[in-house]
Image (cartoon, rainbow over all chains, first blue to last red; front, side, top):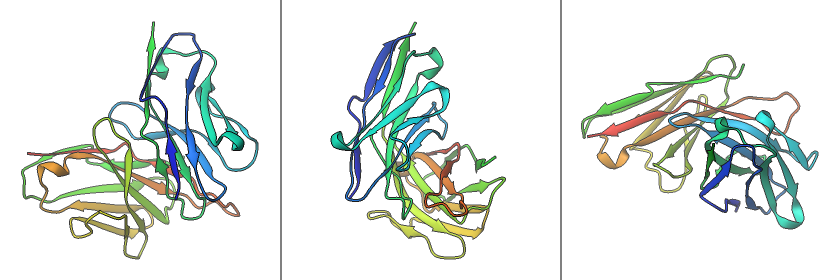
Length: 113
Length: 119
């Protein structure tokens, strides 16, 4: 069975500071990993995805994530937070066959001025 | 490209009534659509997988007679919440899967969600 764990349901950073959102996965097969962002009362927007190519994945809005098999991690980072980054972020895993997405519990990012 | 719409965006209904939610892929054909529900401040939980022209596959614990899914065309799937009760109040989100020629992974595109409130 596949699962993802997001450490920290709430993360608060100052504008301009580093953003680090943690995600650890569990999978019996090579996983496909995703980060999505959700703004209030909206659907999900894909930030980036890992599909067994380069381990460092660059996404939209300046976000990137690094797949570390030894640590079973796929943490999301951004060098400098903007106010517009305040949203909920979800890590998800898929087996690539059924394409079912298993979501983590989400991390609410607050950006302080 | 790859836009998914949902209608309605919000619906309030009385307990015991049925509510239909539409999910449309606007500029691509979606062989598969997924339906999720999201409770306040919680993650998305997959309810069912809908394939065009066949019966939906429901996740464990989801009542198929309660949540009727129809995927009549490659651009439309509907979720009907039958005899809705207050505990069905939630945010329902659909996603549609594209088919990438030669690719192993088909990306899912999410709709904006439907907020259902049952009084």
